[in-house]
Amino acid sequence: MSAKVIDGKAEAERLRGAVAEEVARLKADHGFVPGLAVVLVGEDPASKVYVSSKAKQTVEVGMTSYEHKLPADTPEADVLALVERLNQDPGVDGILVQLPLPKHIDSTKVLETIAPDKDVDGFHVVNVGKLSTGQWSLVPCTPYGSMMLLRSTLGKLSGLEAVVVGRSNIVGKPMAQLLLKANCTVTVAHSRTKDLPAVCRRADIVVAAVGIPELVKGDWIKPGATVIDVGINRVPAPEKGEGKTKLVGDVDYASAAKVAGAITPVPGGVGPMTIATLLGNTLIAACRRRGLTPPT
Ligand code: NDP
Image (cartoon, rainbow, N blue to C red; front, top):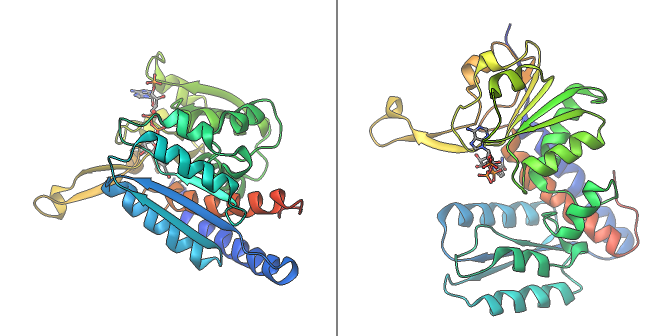
């Protein structure tokens, strides 16, 4: 058996297309264009790449992109003051502060300063609390994108057994909440979990968000299960030449694809969904802030 490959690139393109159509409609019918502000502090190379692709895709769907690039030694008070200004700016519907922040800046303090209705990353405690109490909230982009892939692959998720490996605030925990909301029976595994292979083996859905290259093996997967690999790990690729690298997930794709019913590849699975859902969240935030019904 060979698993169906879940095409995150195609799904992300579809979502961006839907967002672009809605942005055009808002402009024509209501005379405004949603705006997304991204704040980058410092020179982290991966963060710089993420921020520029976020800005590019924001413009491509017809929204306004505001980029704020600050030097690595910017005092915390200045970052907080910028966030406050963006909170007040009527043209800004979504605010994203790129993590990680330099060590002298308290990221929790910065994230908690973002107005919850502009918190398109869904990390503010108000949005986290609303999600965990079953209220409507802005939802963190990566788990949101993973849920879209699960729904397009499986349709209804109700009653399925889901195992989320990883309990971070940005992926594992919100993913577990979303699966719970979709009426799955959810287990959250982590570094202290005993017999992780056996825990994974009972799952209809495995979501791996660990940060360890190819940790989850094929013989941990129940035949026919759906595997969502959130991991993005750069590893040496001597087969491509000296000093070359490649991206792999937290799942050993080669062995898992032989057992799973469906699986996301890395790259091309969850990764492309993250920016597309960020744009979706910005659109939703823009509509809700103006009392308009957001698209579903
Ligand atoms: P964190 O480092 O914040 O969390 C990792 C989690 O994995 C922790 O809960 C940790 O457990 C758990 N863990 C560590 N080792 C093991 C182990 N041996 N067995 C079981 N669980 C273990 O990572 P993130 O959640 O931020 O990211 C996870 C992965 O997802 C990374 O590869 C990251 O690059 C990727 N990612 C991808 C995104 C995308 O857009 N596709 C977006 C965000 C992240 P404990 O809590 O006990 O320490």
